[in-house]
Image (cartoon, rainbow, N blue to C red; front, top):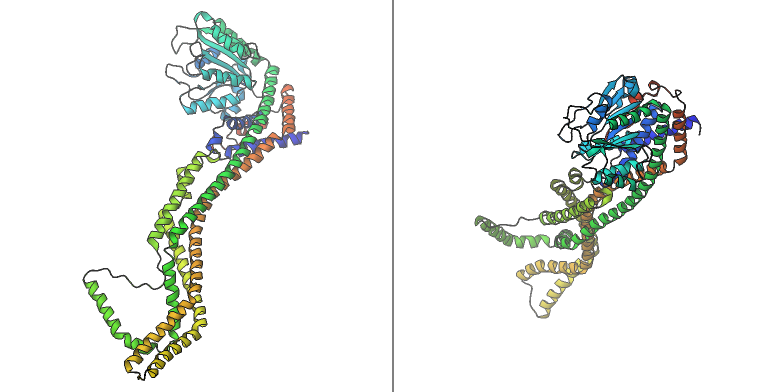
Length: 600
């Protein structure tokens, strides 16, 4: 791979880092150590490439709470870098000891920076790190970050706490990632390491691995401000080991090249592992989407029979009212019948007035289909609230999106009372308009088909009455004529209504379907909110999957990048100056090409 393609791949590396830093991770995935490690490795690969192989080697004093890390580092360099004391944890931010020649790196170091002019430590950055087992999350996060950016470790643990599980867990991590790790057992009686400690270390590969020398420091009767005596044999050996590394640039740069290659290998392996997790999560997300869709469909079907009974009487009344209005227009005897009925209408009005005076409820006359607002809305809201709560519990318990559904997000997804009431009223208004229009159309078609039936029914009825009178030899009185004029149209209407009842029943079925369709549309709107939420999460998982596939499939380009870094490290004094690589701006997470800072 030529230099141009290597540079292109290094820029792609920075793009991967930006995408991962900006991605909004589900809590179940963001808490995965492998995912955090992938982001940390990418961040450090980008930083190391930009700083160049000529940058100083980073050595961290690492260990659990109260092990004596700060006092040890201050004693090694002969001055107090950070205070130590009985309050635990005392060191809350990392402290970087940096030669003034590398001052351009100072703005990129996330912690307190102490500059010095001692050429003996020129090629090293010494780091006093916070406790990895601190009770404070921020301290543990800082220790985790230091774990990724450091090239070699001086692991400090005291003889009373070395048996803690967290101590061996971190030692195993340091051994597995292949970074040199010297071990200092502090506060030992007689200056000897306990046999149990050495046995445990032997089971993990022994103390003779690369950079795995073990030193012991005795318990010293000194206060927190007093440094460890500089001529103490163990302290002298530790200092000499570090100074040898600082005084051998070739060894330091070879170590940096090896760390760079190891980091790339771990990145590729972890990306492959996470790829399987991402694909599995995507499949679970599809199952979750289908489950939520089924919940809303079942809820709409459960509501159908409970609402059907509130539709039928009003529909029949609306169709027949409009149908009778049209029939009456072709009734030639309607005016005489109205005149005869006037006394009865006056009597009915008087009764209504008297009932109202006694404080009785008088049902208002309704023109058209009543909205059925209260009970219908309450049934709808109760069903939707139950389904939304079931969906919330499912979303919070299923791993693909666990942690994404915050209370604020859930409030946006669920219909609030006022919003649902407004949507219900809109649907009922649309329903009433549809029923009125369809009822008018049906009444018109029924009227056109029954005009002749209506006239024939009147003729037949009146013919029967007159024939009966003639046959009995009687004569038609005015009262009989009046009664006949009122009854015969009613009989004709009854005949017409009986003839058209099948059509009305079919219309009622259509109305029930339309009514259910409008209610189902409200369910569908709420369903789409939840499924849209899942769709966004799925799109994120798809982007993650594509990114991990690209990382995992870039083995050849990654190896070429490692080779280029190793060549630059081997070419002593020929690497690009720090100023030319823009380290003051781009070497840290906060640089312009390094993406956002911290967790998204």
